[in-house]
Image (cartoon, rainbow, N blue to C red; front, side):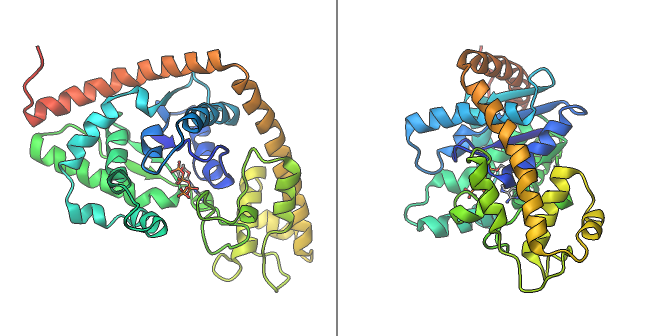
Amino acid sequence: MLSGIQPTAGSFHLGNYLGAVRQWVALQETHDAFYMVVDLHAITVPQDPAELRANTRLAVAQLLAAGLDPERCTLFVQSHVPEHAQLGWVMNCLTGFGEASRMTQFKDKSAKQGADRATVGLFTYPILQVADILLYQAHQVPVGEDQRQHIELTRDLAERFNGRFGETFTIPQPYILKETAKIYDLQDPAVKMSKSASTPKGLINLLDDPKVTAKKVRSAVTDTDTVIRFDPENKAGVSNLLGIMSTLTGTSIADLEKSYEGKMYGALKTDLAEVMVDFVTPFRSRTQEYLDDPETLDSILAKGAEKARAVAAETLAQAYDRLGFLPAK
Ligand code: AQP
């Protein structure tokens, strides 16, 4: 099991948490899990060095606050394991230009930035992600729906390498939970909640002041109807709120629909605001506790990188050998 998260935004948002991190916490109990903060991916767009460093620690603190346990999983920073960039290059050389051009996330992001400003790194980002996954021989990759195409590319490249050079890489599967595959912007429930595309009012940052979070939930856009029913096609806003509520409380959507029968949207929003506040308040304080102890954080990361490197180095050595690289004496 392998997954990663970017350290770019400061606070994780609710989409990151429900779409990915929450699954990571559960899966560390049942799988040999590798989780990383992907700083190499972060520099595909411009970064301020001091902010990047601080945000990388902040991302690790949030992962620990969310429940990752370094005794149960391997938690590390991507740039601490040089094999990612090394296998990334190999995968670049296996990918067709047209194939890379079909990645929709690049198309969306480069369109937003302007084609002249998008970097080659942003273009090849999915190929580095392929290397991230294959290095650990991951069987499953817990991610949100927006990453499905990148996992498909990973499968294609793993099969291509195995076909040309002999069985080397495990073919991974995406692990995407239907209920939380895509969390939507609270102000525009037609688009996914995202740090770069959401309006400030539509984006729930987990480290926001809980009062701000409650206000955002209470002013979520719904519709002119009054029935609280899960129907993503016709009632995107209400369905988004029901999905979030269901996941955070562990109550099924059907039970929620029953309990809100005859009630107004305001009741659902007020209850969800309360649930959110109960969730983010301890999350914020746990994150701060980890940030206040940078030595412990760094030692967790040092151990994580050592464990990750042991696996990554073995896979890379095998891939280099299969490719026909002369061994270094
Ligand atoms: N809205 C979402 N719903 C469900 N899952 C989501 N993820 C992101 N947004 C949603 C999942 O979070 C994990 C980490 O993603 P990332 O580090 O790649 O962050 P991101 O995709 O860059 O987050 P944003 O907000 O979507 O960033 P921008 O706006 O820059 O594109 C991934 O598993 C992702 O699927």
